[in-house]
Image: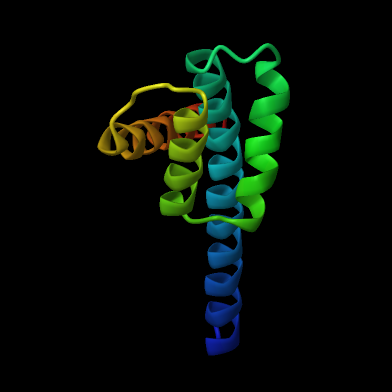
Length: 105
């Protein structure tokens, strides 16, 4: 017989698992966004930029903050890209990453 404590433990485990998946997906997405952005900005070391952006995003997990940071970097590199396009690109990449993770599971 499943007790209330067992059910609560199962829900806690499910929540922890889902949060882990979301964190890993966001980290992968952020690195991919960094590679994409580095290419647009014609950076000489796109991997370093992608890793720097992904590390920055760990302390600034909001997608809005990431869009703002990308906007700053694009402005500094004189890359014209619409801000709405950045948010759309982030969302599309997250969907792709989640689909890849689901397919690999």
